[in-house]
Image (cartoon, rainbow, N blue to C red; front, side, top):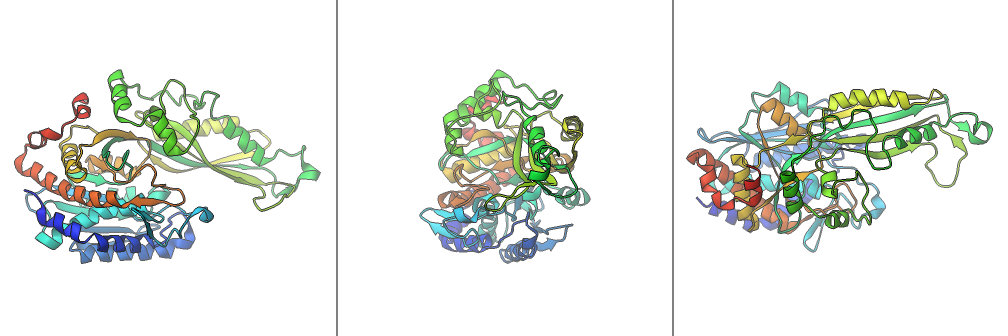
Length: 479
């Protein structure tokens, strides 16, 4: 059955949807910065109120050890499947502020784009699901499936409280399938389903030297500079070919068959496309692999930031007492984050000179995931994309990490459909983040069709036959 009323409602209410999304973006819900704690609470309260007003039940904020979760549900379909919708309302810090063309927390439409921090990561993409629910509830007073929404405020800091919350509430959060929209697709008319993501291990390395900052003229050359020692340690973590030097780091890395690499070469971005999206002129990394393979099926170690010593204008002759580096691994099947943490600690201990001390603080773990491209829910998503974008999606790997996806797999024992609506040039995590508005409209339409397709799959138990016409070469190759 075509969800005509819901689709018409979504088309007619686009201007209001955009105004509501702008108000959502205007909350400076930066989870990494303590000064915004109250802003996150206000954002969560507003979101819970919005979910209640569109017709969802039990909408509320749930306290955690830090920033609150937002939960809502609609469970009135006795025979239908249950869909768990995940998103996050927290955002990355907006700095550097001087590179923004408009204030990051004053959402602005310019042309076909909505600019603001969180516009695409993840407020805009998450909002597409919210508006699809509203379209059904306002026109049909019911949803075609049961729905549970869990929206968190700590994704950008590694979701430190989400896993334990799901563990404690696995019964009330039980579902048949989860859906997450928090990733890009290759282009405005190139929808894609993500079927694999890398895992992650984030940590902070601190090197400690003298008890206080020292005059570099009086002590330079006699006391080992912690900032220098830190750079020496970090510089040793890669060899000249871009490989990580930690002993045993590659021992569990899965080798993929030629058929999978052929599929990736056919569907993924070319080396030129990837570099253009990165606005880089030359590639770097492990030899023997394409840029797309390096960012998806190969692990990586990234230096995310280094701090130490004087950071102000001009000069200051100082040997800092301490220096800190923030680093992160992206892990692939079948690497184990806990095992690699132990290897890392031992290696850092060996690399640390006796003239300084080092301290390693691990901040988050996440395992890599790979999902079956032929799962019925994947076919439902493919059908929905075809209706929303007018084109069948391709199946892609993503080099990023969403920790909750592995939690859903291990704790709730359900797969996750990863269907994004953002674009590679939407500047996620960068100044002038945006969301391409035609993709927002298509995203709402796609989400409406996805709900309908999931309901049809449960009712007919014949999803492969219903959606055979959207089967692609990628699906066939994965069998």
